[in-house]
Amino acid sequence: MNLYGFIDKVISFGQNNPIIAMIVAVIFLFLIYRKPKLTLSLLIIILILVGIYYVIMDAASSAKMEKKRLIDKAEKSSTINRE
Image 1 (cartoon, rainbow, N blue to C red):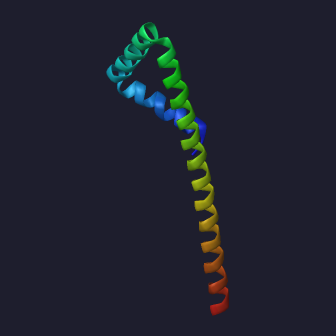
Image 2 (image 1 turned 120 degrees about the vertical axis):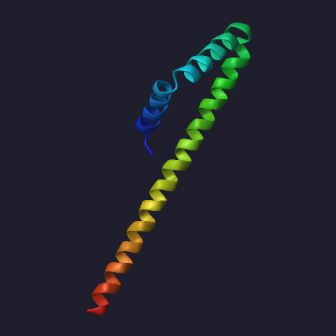
Image 3 (image 1 turned 180 degrees about the horizontal axis):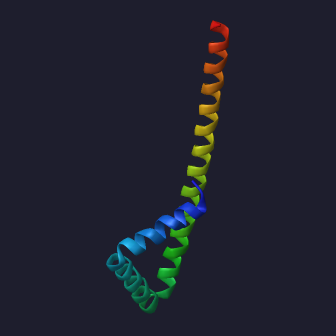
């Protein structure tokens, strides 16, 4: 999972669901106006959680690719031994 793919998904969601995107933007702007400290604190927490999620998904995809490589290597060696 790369960062650009995630950004593309967010942008495509906003383009496919403009009403929901506008509602989220209006709510965000309202919260910034009413309670800026709380909103910015929540935004920072959300960004930290998204970063943690990204790191976990990146590590999981690396581990999955390594596992697939090892399985392919084992299958290849077993095929060579049969011949």
